[in-house]
Length: 205
Length: 120
Image (cartoon, rainbow over all chains, first blue to last red; front, side, top):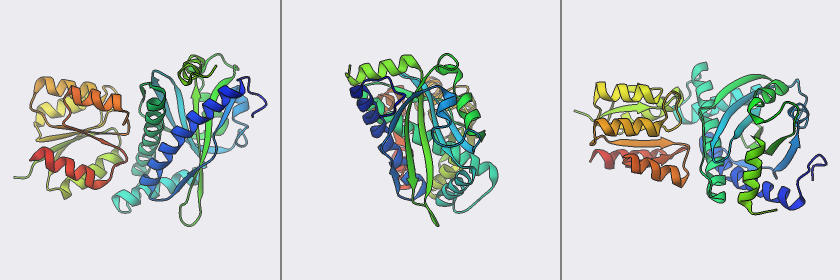
C-alpha cells in the first residue's frame, strides 16, 4: 500500500476494485478503437497533493499529451489520460488509420484523440456507475500538451484546497501497437466529497 | 432519392467516421452539427430523415437537443451514438425520444443495422 495513504486497508482495497472495474471496460473500448490488444496494470490509489502526484509517474517536467475529461454526475473530478507526446501522436494516427483509412491531417488526429479520451472516460465511468449504482457523466474532453506537473495542476482547482491531498485512482495501460507496445496512464482525480460518496457506495467503512 | 442524415457530434473525427458509414448505407449526409444548439438549428433548417446524436457536446448536450427536436417534430428519427453507455442514460435517451442507442466505440455493422431499421 502507498505509504502516503490514510485510508484504511479495506477502503484502499475497495477503491482499487472500483478502479479495476473501470479500467477493464476502458481497456476494452481502447482495444476496439485502436485495433490492438490492451492490458491494464493493477490499479493504485494515491492520496497526495498534486505537486507530489506529478512525481509519482515520472519527472514533473516530462512533456506529456493529456486528455482531460471533467467528470460530472453523482461523483465528480477529472479523468486524465496521459501519454508521451510521440505515443499520443502515434495513437491518434492509428485510430484515424483504423477507422478512416489513413488520413493523417493534424486536426483529425487531435479530434481522434479527444474522441478516444471521451470513449475511455465514458466506458470507465459507465462501468463504475453501474457497479456503484451511481449516474456518472462527463463534459467534452480537451487535449493539452505540456509538462506533466502543469497538466495535473490545471486539473486541480476544482478538487480542493491548493496543496491538499487529492484522491487519485490510477492505472496504466499497455497497448500492443506495431512496431512496439505503448504505455498510457489513466488517472481519475476525485474531489474529497466524491471520495467520501464513493466509499459510502462501496459500503466499506 | 436517398435518405438524408444530419450528424451531430463535437468531434470532427467521429463525424467523418459516421459519414463514411452512412454513405455506405446509401444515405446522403445533408448537414453536420458540433453542438446541441447547432443540432436543433440544423434540424429545423434541413428536416433530415435521420439524425445521429452524440450526448456529450458543448453549449447544449445531446439529451437536451434531442428533447428540443422531438418537441418541434415528434416524428423525428434520432439515433443516439455516445460513449456514455450507462443504462440510466440509455433509458433517459429513449424516454426523451431516441429511436435507438449505439455505444461508442461501436462496430460498423451495429450502426448500419440501426440505420436500416430506422429508415425502414
